[in-house]
Image (tube, rainbow, N blue to C red; front, side, top):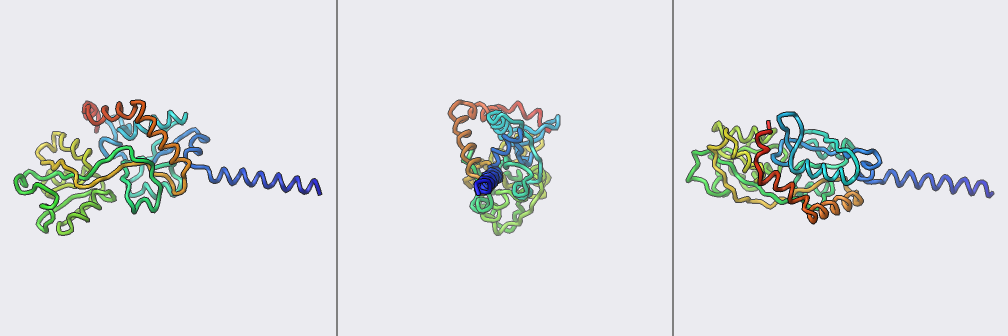
Length: 266
């Protein structure tokens, strides 16, 4: 009887250990593995992008680098199209999403978000022929205007919401969308403010007009699987730490105040 009882207890303990491991969060998995795997789409300047050496760099990438150092692990970036970020997370292809993702109610039904690490909004790049004709997003809500957006982004959602009367076109990357305005195939491009501000500074885009006032409020955050509260707790404390010790301000100034890095971007 005693032997049987002892065996039952042992089996129960093993089962509990396996259960605990199965429920471990993404951060715990990364520490155990020695690698933090992050899903990203490196087309969002200056958050994640590819330099001339083929390296993925940017403000959010630097934040993730500091995060991995704090965890004592290596950082592995898994590049996928933007529309494949959520499916990739759910399929365990990576531990978290770090790709300039805006927190929305619709997305929050499918994954959990950390605290926001920056707030941006949508702005407009205009063809120079619209100088004096368009001064706000409301002016573009007309069937005579052609609007370019990036597929799967909140820029696309904002265009659908605010510009229902206009003719919308979707492109795989923001660079393609901006180019449509440059060549006159579109009248305006809708995208996040940081990207549009930097895109307008490029030589090939300098003729474009910029409506700099954002017309939406969009917090960006890291995404993890629903129910992974241990990982959220660690990430949120990390974000608070770097905000307090000056790390965040240093990285922010590097990418948003100093534009020397533009010379290294392909």
